[in-house]
Length: 145
Image 1 (spheres, one colour):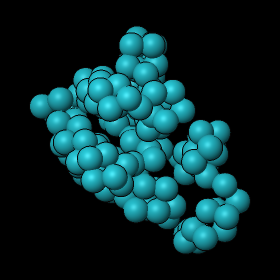
Image 2 (cartoon, rainbow, N blue to C red):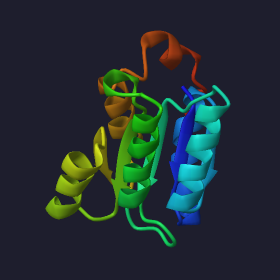
Image 3 (spheres, rainbow, N blue to C red):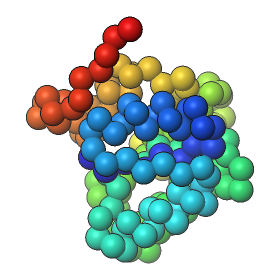
Image 4 (cartoon, rainbow, N blue to C red):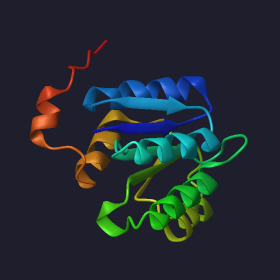
């Protein structure tokens, strides 16, 4: 599973990256504009992302706008439905308006509230069809302190 994370907060970005890189290559950027650029480059190179995680509140371009641009890029390339990248919106806010905008206006696949609980994230990845038993068996073990 190839993942792109867009998160402006260093600590949140690091935590998300550590949780997700256990399942495959993981790139991380600091804002929505960089996320759209990375997404488009990967798509053009024939190495698209399987998952994009977007923080909603970021400078330069927020996650909602980045999601709209990602979906517009896919539409221009004829990518629709199950071919679209899975997008998880991340937010510290459990705000119904943000949830509605992410799902109905933006086309998000999922919405998770930070801080990311590893069990909740893995459960969401399984529900999205991004994790299977073989991937979970190959993942690096987590250490409990």
